[in-house]
Structure formats: structure tokens, C-alpha cells
Image 1: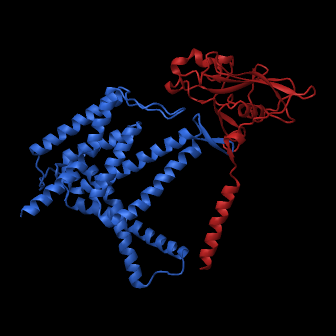
Image 2: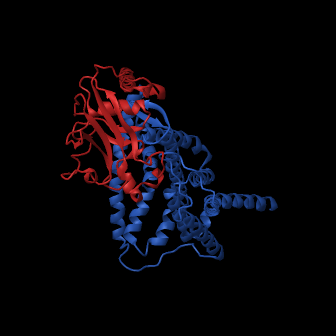
Image 3: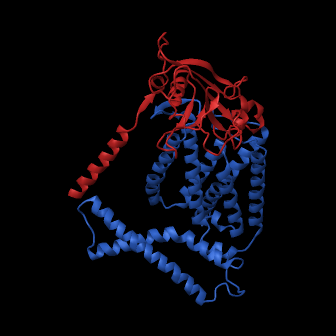
Length: 293
Length: 186
């Protein structure tokens, strides 16, 4: 069930551009944390349950790595915690590092949701006729990593079937993975070239042509795009006026609670939790209808 | 298995070198509470740290720094103070000792990381390079003269006066007429 994914591609693209765009430029900790939470909740609904532990094992160490790196290289701030080789490790730099990690992980979460929701056909539907070459390249780039992981698995399984694997220790295993990696890289590059040649052979992008799609812009999409743009405008107004500005250096600043700032926080929070709410509502409706049958 | 043992050994070695090369000090250890006492026969130099030029260019200053805590009203971060000159001390050694003693924040780039083999002072009292316009940063003078040599290469003599001064215009605003990019930064 992807209730949010059933919106028109134009609505979805607007939504993702709005949320990721604001998130990347927001300096305010409240907005960053709400966006991260919204992204995590949405991601949890979209993911398969068995993929969650593996993802936690990736994102939590990455979060810690980003958070720890900043205070090691940035020494500004008025509250030293301790000194490393004569340079201070400050409270301000550590807090900044944590919020930097919030942004990095949060944007990754939203991009993950984006690739789940905005599948290649939706992207090509939007841009295929306007900028055919660029949109084909982009949709190939978006699907590159997931495809790469799948191919890694295929090659590893094939090698195991041939008896080409080592049980002796992890150095040998790393070596084996390296060989698989190299072969998959050349496979992927070759395949990308073949794709473009095969698309050219079909005269892709040469002339106007119609294409089949199931997408229709309905009343529901109109409401959704209006709400998205309204919330986006409210948040951007708050940010542009400087009400939501927040400083970490040299001393951690105060959180602004002026009406304009609170409006920006709340509209951004609604924007960030919108997909989660829509998904949950969709799931509840689905259950309800099933129980009626 | 043998390869694994070698790999683990190498990793342990790298970690040991990293930890061994890192010097961790607590705040109290870093800030010197005691400094060499001035005795009649000790050699001394006078050090001062100032940022008057910012007061004239207040509009260029980073908004987060517009407070008396970082830019004092009279522009004096450290009034002229006498410090004991140990044998072979450079201007940087005196600055380092004085900032530690007075708990003034200071960040520098080590000799091995700058291109010209001397320490580069990035910021004092949270006033960093570029904090007050694109041509701002720290500069130092010995006996009123801007030195074209890095501050950790400049060995001092008895009775000299060292001033660390913040400039907003590559040193032109504190009386340096012959500046070239980079050569004047302490």
C-alpha cells in the first residue's frame, strides 16, 4: 500500500523538491529535527520490515561518524570541553556536529523515500518529452545504486555456485568482494552504454511521440499541490525574514519563538509529517474496507 | 588465518600510533594557572592583543560576533603585559603562553600544515580570519614594525614589544603600505 505514491507525479515532485530544498538550507535545530523525524517515520512505512536492522546498522554509525568529525576539525566556540594536541574541542562544535549529522542523515532518508515513491516511469512521464536525454540519464542514475546492489548479489551467488569462495578468513573474503565489485562495475558501465544504444535504435527523443500512462491530475492532486505550496511559502517566508535563523558559533544562540518563527516551524512540521499521515490514513482505510467485506 | 592475524596486528598498530600521537588535555591542564615569575635578572618581552580596527568597520563584522564579549569596547583583548622570555622563544610561544594564562581562546594552524613552514594564527578570542570582511585576519608587529616572517620563526630578544593586531584590510589599516597577499600574515 502506497497511499502517498498514488498522487500525480507532478505533485510528488513538487513535494520532494519543497521538503528536501528547505531541509538542506534550514539552520534551525527545530526544523532539522522535525524533518528528520518525518523522514524516518515515512521511511519506516515504505521499507520492508526485514531491511530495517541492516539500515540501522548503517545509519547509526554514519550519524556518529559525522557528529564526531566536526569538533575534531572545527575549534571555534567559547566552551572548551578538553584540548586535543593544543586545540580545543568545544561544546559548540560538538552540538553543531550533531545537527550536521541530523541534516545529512535526514536528507538521505528523504532521498530514500524519493527513490521508493518517484519510480523511473513517473520521472520519465514528467520530463521524457521535454528533455528526453537528460531525463533518461537521470532515471538511469537514480536506479544505478539499487541495481548495482542487486547485481552484486547475483554475481556473489553465481561465484558461490561455482565454488569460488573462501571460508578461511576475512582478508580473503574482502579480496573476493573486491573482485565481485570490479566485475559488477564493468558490467554496469557496459550495460549503461548498451541501454543508450538500444534507446537510440528505437529513435528515442528524435520526434514527438505519445506514450501510455495511468496518471491523471484529479481534484485530490490539486488540493495536495495547493497545500504543499502554501506550507512551503509560509516556511520560506519565515526563513527569508531571518526569524528562524540560528547560530551555533561562537556561542549557541537562542531559539526564536516569535509568531513568524512559530508559524514557520509548524507549517514545516505539517509539511514533513504529511506523507506519514496520508500513509497511515490509507492503511487504516484499507483495513476498514477489508473488515467490511 | 595467517593473513587475518597480520591484518589485525596492522590495525592495532595504526590505532596505537594514532592514540600515542594524540595529546589529550583537560581544560584545567591546558590553561596555565601558573606562569614564570618575573625576577630581576629574567629577560622579558611585552605582549598586547588588540582589535581596534574592527570598531571602525563594525558593519563588516559577522553578526554573531557583535558583542562586547568578543570585541571589547576599547578594542583591547590583552593590555600590554610583561612575560618572561625563555631562551629561544618566538613570538608564537609568547602568544601561546599568554593566551593560555589569560584563558583567551586561540586557534592556529600548525607549522606542518601551512605552506610556508610557520604557524598561522586563525583566530584569537573567537575573532577569526574573514570575520570582518574578506581582507581581515591577525597580524603581528615587533617594536611597531610589521614583520614579513611567520610568528613561530621570529625569535625574540630581551625588551622587545610584540603586538598582535586584527586587521580588516590586509594590514593597510595598521600602517603597512607594502603588502602582498599572504606574506604579512603571522
